[in-house]
View (cartoon, helix red, strand yellow):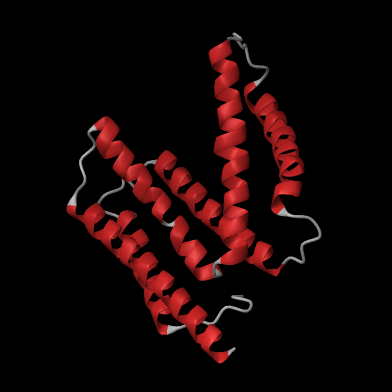
Length: 189
């Protein structure tokens, strides 16, 4: 499943630490597992992680005819059509009060938050090992936790601090494993 990537000791250790860090974030004592909405949210997070993993594997194995940048417009148009249709089916037609601010927010969300982010992730997936890329995406919850602490004054308990340390260490080990693999490949010609 890793394709051409070699699983080295630093990469394996990094993956293990990253997974333990994620498990620490989802520890049963810090989450209300009796709340159906919490279970649904955790299930969606797991489904998103599986989807990203499939995306990473596919991008690395795909034989590219066009660049990710050339395909980006079509990906965004298809996603917009699917999500708009689902939103209308589930929530009905929206009542929109158009303003310049709303238009700018749409442009920012569509161009920067979606198109640029997806293009950048595709380029990273093509150039860095699948394992390192996947571990890098585990930093996403850390950004959310840090943002909540800074912007909303949410407390960071010991389990979150340990989880953050494990995830960051896992990312560092996987990156180190990538550098060692590249330097060995360069030395071997």
